[in-house]
Length: 187
Image (cartoon, rainbow, N blue to C red; front, side, top):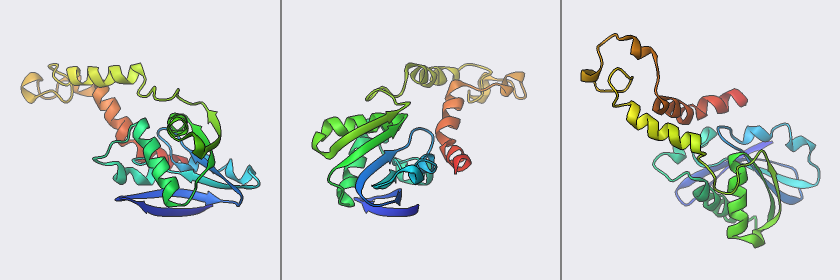
């Protein structure tokens, strides 16, 4: 596979490419990157395989800072990227969060989608799931609870045993900040 980049507006977009033929665009899930498809692409014959990296994931984490990286917006980024590299129509394949991106792109511009393949996919725009929404909400509450990490120093005694515990907000922070670490583990 060949690693490629293309400026799309003010965003440097990345993807892996291999093969020739009708375009097959592969979109990874969370918290991965195009390397997710590294064992799949060699098995595909007769297609131009383009494993696109969502903005804010893998090596594109810096491109996602201070940007909307929602599932809906990723669909817009995907379609803009396809325009920039001259892909008018493609089969769209999505895993996990990438499946939601594919579904939204196909609904938004049905003429661009020659087919769709989903694997272990979210449904359309169902991210974040309720448990993640709860963690985000609980994290804000827990960070003001005396004795919890992240609470103001006046709310917890220094060296308290509570400092060994973490809050859902910190777990979520690790999850979002950990995408680089997870992506590196997968490559």
